Length: 100
Image (tube, rainbow, N blue to C red):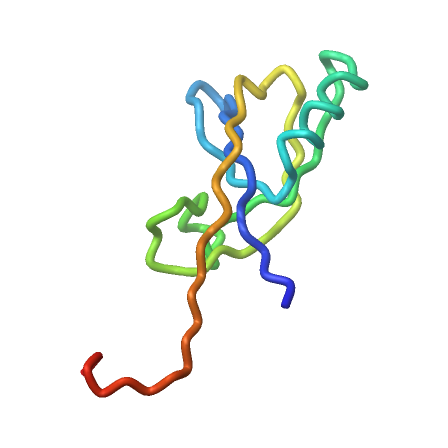
């Protein structure tokens, strides 16, 4: 099963504020892109947003699933990035009366 989830949190300057972008790229991929590009180049990341575009950026704890879209940002707008932990999912279809 191929489940998309955010692997990295990018802190990016958009306008005059710093926003977190949750992307599917790994920190290694981001480091490589940052090293091989110049300061004025644009980088494209698959980014999580809320399903309704007008509702803004998706973040963990939103009550909706993310909608994945490509966002392009200038390299010098990226201020920092943090590796996120893998989500832990436990699917158990066993019926146990004590659980109810």
